[in-house]
Amino acid sequence: MTPGLASYLAQAAAGGSGQGFSLPGIEVDRLWYYVVCAVAFTFAGLITGYFIWRKGAMQMHDAEAEIQRTSGELKRLSDDLKIEESAL
Image (tube, helix red, strand yellow):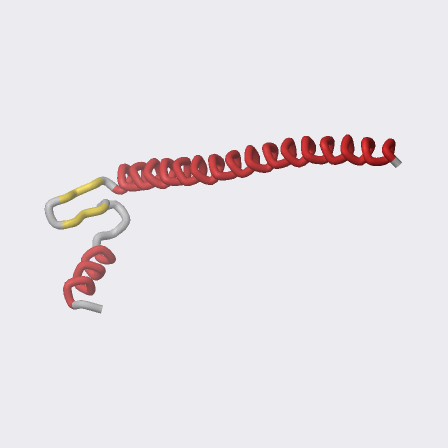
């Protein structure tokens, strides 16, 4: 651990529960820090979830299109088989 990080962690531990979050030049109340973190993680989760949902929706669309193509091909093959049976 670097000396700068160790001194920062020591200052943060000595700050107590009522101080808040502080970096050089930035002073943030602890409540607002948690609110900002909660909002940021919520938005990150929503964005990630949207992309996962969208990928699943595209895969479902591809599967449904493949089912329709396969059913059409199966119908054509069954029609060909009926023609061949009638010829025999």
